[in-house]
Every structure is written in C-alpha cells, then in structure tokens.
Image (cartoon, rainbow, N blue to C red; front, side, top):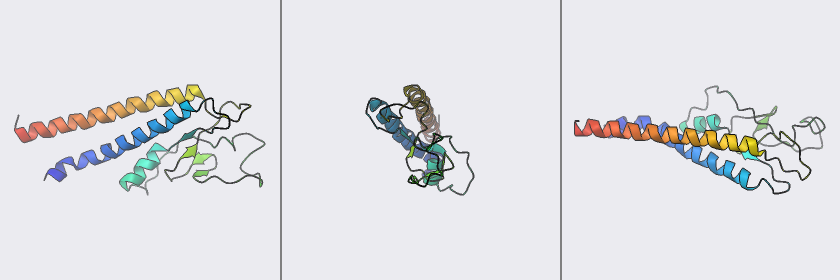
Length: 151
C-alpha cells in the first residue's frame, strides 16, 4: 500500500537525479570556459527522463542542440572528412540520453565552444527546475505523512 502511495514520486525522484547531473555538466562547461579546445556538453533532459522511466516510445520534442563542430557551413554534416558524432542527427540530439555537444553560437580562435551567457541561463533555469522538483517531492511527502497521521 505504501508503494502505491509513493509510486507517483518515482518520476520526480528520477527527474531530480537528472537535474543534478545536468547541473554538474553545466557547471563543468562554465569551469572550462577558458580552456582552449573545450567543447560544451549537455543532455537532452526529456529523452533522458523518458529512457529512465521506460517511456521511450513516446514522441517527445527535441532540444535544439547542435554539435559545435558541424554547426558552421564549411564543416557541415555532409563533409566526408568529418566523423559522425553519436547521439546527434540532423543537428539535433537523438533519442539517446547520452551527452551531446552544445551549439557553438560564437566561434572562438582557441576552439572553445562555451557561451557563458547561454551556460548561465541554462544553469539558472536548471536550478529553478531542480528546486521546483524538490519542493514538489517535499509537498507530496508532507501530504502522505499527514494522511498517515490522520491530520
């Protein structure tokens, strides 16, 4: 019976883990903003959550993340001299929740693809969503506790 009461929290617990992982990735991107040749990474949260919950067959919208190496015109995906990256098809993340490369918005001389404005915005957005998920779990837990105690 308790398992049935807490089964609704399972997806939120998994989402919390994914949010924490994404936060770590975004923090790593920001920490390497001055590292020459560093390529920013990110995950497709919706696809990763769908895979964790076993809801893979459902069609989900994809994030508009593009491989930084294939984003420019001269290094397009059709160039036979370039290697195909796993998890990216037609400039977007595929259904696999593996790490993908973030789109490079402004080319740099040293090959670093970290855009601090984008990373900060993503970091704050992910933080707010992490906090919202945590508050939802706390609220559900308090509701279950109140029901058990009969208050």
